[in-house]
Image (cartoon, rainbow, N blue to C red; front, side):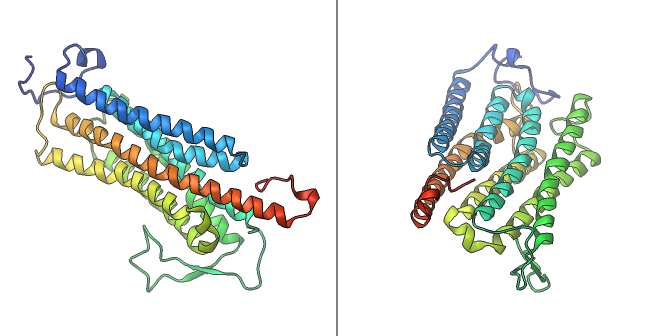
Length: 324
């Protein structure tokens, strides 16, 4: 077929070899721009990771921060592969879906690590425990009047861990089932049935529940988390979730309404997927820049806390690290 004519009968995009056989100048420019966004995001991630290690923070906190910061580079990589090879874009989405579930786990582990170093004991029962309202976004913010307050005790921390860690099991499991259905031809571009929609809903609910319990943990220790800029980090992760779910759903809706037309060699569903991945690349770069600035402030704050703590301790304790 000659370039420029329209064919809406493609069930799937061509492979990467066929796609790059006849590349137009416009496509080369687009790939160059996408490559620049991707390389910039990865370089920024590498630089931040090296800085985390050089600042001599604890291995635990550095590992959590590097994994969280790597979320933007990972999604940028998957989106770049989705642009270069649209045939593999669904698999790229599956891979990042699993990575993102572990990002939420690393995030709550970072919060628990901060509380531990602030002297908060998860197992210790207090005579006058603090309380936190169950009215927290993204699930219960509409039911402020009927949501009770619960005590922050060992059971609270236990339920928070269960509420967050469940996403590490449910979301990869749903992703695995979707991948199996995809390889057998039951799932693809603009090819979904009730079973696939049910898996996607279950996966989305798992993420929302995890974020809800993370928000409860933050609300119960706001003053302790303020110096560590946890709120802004959490917002960055929420924006990634919005991009993964809502932005992608919007493009699916535009495809169904015929707003995005088909154009050789892609049908409308594949074009919508490619446009989504193209937009993800600059979005991840901006979020990475924003998050890296926050992480740098977090590191500076921990260094100041470590210095002040060393001055208040005896000489025998001066050489001990702030994070054990």
